[in-house]
Structure formats: C-alpha cells, structure tokens
Image (cartoon, rainbow, N blue to C red; front, side, top):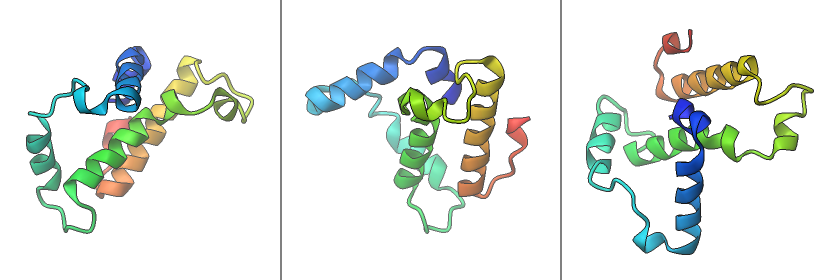
Length: 108
C-alpha cells in the first residue's frame, strides 16, 4: 500500500476528496472489505479488532503522502529522494510488524 501511494498518490487524493465532499457515493471496494477483515482477524487475540487494525495500517501506509512537507524535511533530508523513501518504507514495515506482532523480514 505504501508503494502504491508513493508511485501515484492520485487515488488517495481522489478518495480523500470524495470522503470530504460526498462520502455516501464514494467509489470504494466495499465488497472486498469483509474478506480483508476476516483475513486480518485470523489468529488475533481481539485486543485490536480486524477493522481497527486495517484502518491503522492504512493510515500508516498513507502517512508520508499526507504529512506536511515541512515535517518531512525537518531532519534536513529530501523526502522525495529514493534513499529517504526507502527509509520511510522501512519505518512503515517496522510499525506494522510491531502492531501485528509479525516479524519485520519484509522490510529487507
């Protein structure tokens, strides 16, 4: 999801606009959500519901596209540089791994 938004943030922007302007008619894959929540909920202890978990993961993956550029530059780096994007991606993977209790092997 992080890679998708980095490659082309248009879908995210359109989705945000639709949620602000006309949330009841926003085009979204509602048919896919139940299966995703079942998948996310498998083996979970119930501390975080499957829906909440997916919302949190979605927010983490979108954070670098939605964060003010000044904050992204606060450490003096160029947030659009390939090496910095890779660091952002690793941070996303580590955060999700921490929340889900999964190993962080996918970040390598």
